[in-house]
Length: 66
Image (cartoon, rainbow, N blue to C red; front, side, top):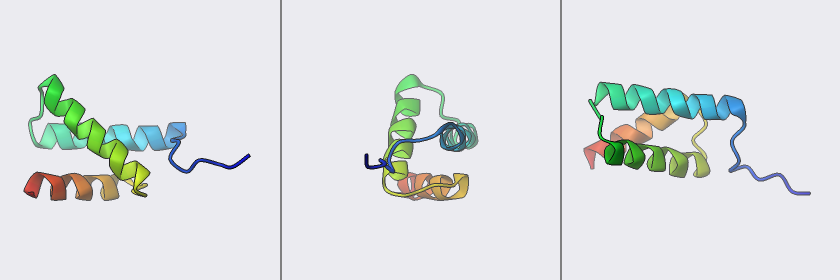
């Protein structure tokens, strides 16, 4: 059986949650649609190889600057 590197384990889910909360708090993101947008992009970045809170936050900052 082949291991799927895009499946998050509990530790990785916690890291994504930390990045999500930190980004939403620092950018005052409160609406459900805006929070879903952030969550969606965190998942995309995870699937793309981002594996740390810093990598995820850097990606979100690049997204915010675009």
